[in-house]
Image (cartoon, rainbow, N blue to C red; front, side, top):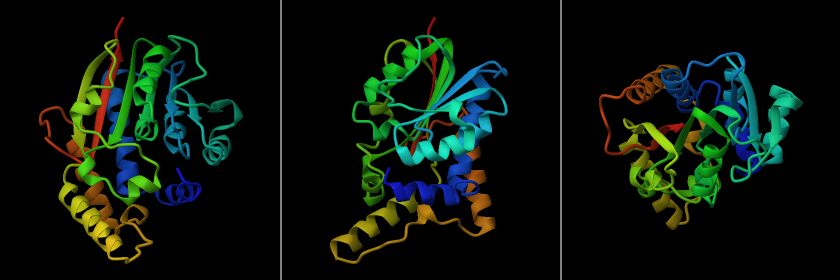
Length: 247
């Protein structure tokens, strides 16, 4: 990401409905498929500011990985020198079969070789270990936001499944952040129209925390719709997939 994006993220991610909700959703799916023990190792790839890794450190050992210096500075301050390392998702500095849980939260869209990254996830996980991956969905939502964050792509469910190697069992996959899809689509298309008209927009809704009541409602809707198996959504702003390494 651009360096200033880390500052934006650190400013809002503690309480913003999307960031806080995403962390709650990922914790839910980890708990569904793996009961974390204090001795387990959770590796957070592309850890950003480290808030998720810090939260998970209350349940197990954590290692936060990122290849941006701005991120590493934040990670070392938050987690300590021993729990943060510089690493690329396509070349993880970890032994085969050494990780119990691996998370990559809105990360592989930043990696040109996303297939290579997911193969690395498979390599380092122990047999029976799980990976939880979240990503932005639908190229129809591509916008200046994706460009600023240096995304290579957004995904459909079908294109996501194409990058998963056969050594993984798929435990859960679904679109998430479904309720706001029409709003996000409209806002991003309108912003694109204004850009073509030469009207510059410096502020983004992603950087702002809504009114507390709205922030709470959006977070509740986001989490409730994503922490269930009964309804398979045809589209959403994001995708989540939970994988288990086959024995």
